[in-house]
Amino acid sequence: MSTTKNKEQSWKHLSIENELRLFQTEQETALGLQEKKDQWFDPVPRKFLLKDKATTTILFGGLTMAQDYLVGGALKGLGYRVEHLDCPDNESLRYGKEFGNRGQCNPTYFTVGNLIKHLHHLRDVEGKSKEEIVRNYLFITAGSCGPCRFGTYVTEYRKALRDAGFDGFRVLLFQQQDGLKQATGEESALKLDASFFISFLKAVLLGDILNAIGYRIRPYEVDVGSTDAALSRCKQYLYDVLSQRKQLFPALRRCRQELQAIRVDRTQVKPKVSIIGEFWAMTTEGDGNYQLQRFLEREGAEVEVQSITAWILYLIWEGRYDTRKRMNLQEADSGRYGLKGKNPALRLLVLGLADRAVRVMFQAYARAIGLHDYHLPNMDQIAQVAHDHYNNNLRGGEGHMEVGKLILNTAKKKVNMTISVKPFGCMPSSGVSDGVQSLITEKYPEAIFLPIETTGDGAINVYSRIQMMLFKAKQAAQKEFEEALAKKGITVQQLQQIPGQAKFTHPLQTSRHVVACTAANTVYGIRGFFNWISFRQNREKIEGV
Image (cartoon, rainbow, N blue to C red; front, side, top):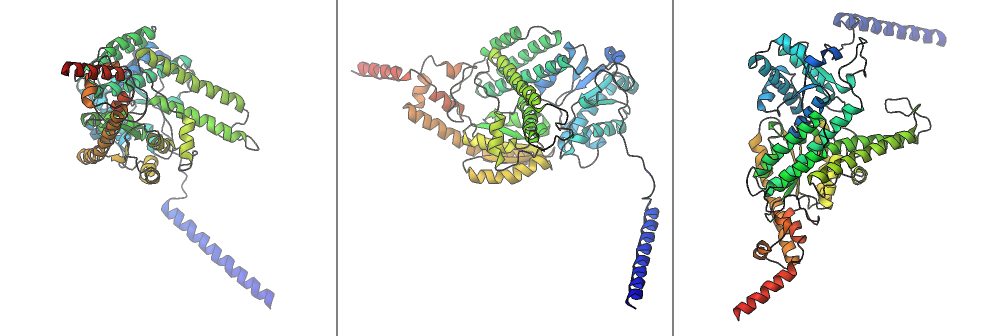
């Protein structure tokens, strides 16, 4: 009896399962889920072949204005026809929102719109036809991926270009190139060889150096606009050298002469403000971040920007860090970054040499042009101080660097204020700035930290928030300056009368770092003034008698 009952229950259960399976099949058929669909693929419209090199113009943009210009010169020196795009503005944002998908972040809208704006200029102002533009122009950019929209940029470019009437326009990523031979068997015009990358690297390093020296001098210039005028001439000298593949150091020394002619007064008390955050938002110099760098300078601050060179060093650090971790696995994995069939010791050696080469090149160029006492970040140190608060294995956006930079900025008194800027809704940077950094500011209550998001509008609100925090930074800088005067036993009036102090007036002279404020460091760096003060006091006594 019991066996029969169990069989009946089993058949009943199978009957229900069959009914459910049948119902599932009917619903999937009704919804079209059983139809076979090919995976969507976004093809590159056309290749960039060697036979087209002489007639094709490469459009490039996306870094700082100095670097875009110099990269154009470097590529021209390799035989390419190049045009760098203007810095994205609000008109670029309008084009991006008109032709791009909804819900994109600022960098996508601005960069995609900037390209379309340029193509509209070629068509509507210069009178080129759509067919001529598609045939004779292409846009080249770097590609990557991660927990944000950066991996979809190239697809956004192509979608927006189709909707804007430029279907078939080529947008190429570095990693899409198949070496020197492409799928057709024909030779590629874009040769990503050692010469290409070294030329590109030189342009990036030189752009960083010009930017750093400009932000260091401009806040203290006596003649307004003299720094920008000198930098403009310097960029032209370096562009000519890169495009003609001539010796670089004579041009750097010529740049040094231009910069030495700028008159400065470093007794002006200005807070030093560091800009960190999402890569594009902190790098661009236009409406994409409300022209943040120039706004801070107009408000009386000295700005410290992050270099593209630091990002290159971070990528090298990633490779070294991951290799060391994978070396300890029981078996080498065959993943994209795996060590199967590879020599980890050799990889570490190559990456170490790459790190050293970048730093040596940077410092050689910096010394030649007059950028003294500029230190590239120690990536191991940043990783170490950030690790307790943000895992070094998390690589979205700037990874742990944003946390590490704020800690070091505060602990080592590098700056008076730190601003983290990112696009609205940027997951990696917003999660750090609005989450982890709140813990950092609790541990370092002296830190003046302001996270801001950019949307393309709302500039007045952003400016207002910055001004409120900048007031605190100005107070902190003034306090550092007054403490420096007190420790040196000198008044402001005496400071202004000290003769022969080149650190006050020489644009390329620097003082030893003690605190964040440049004027305070200048006071700490004064030498030989005690004898001068004694001489003045004795003379005043004699004259009084």
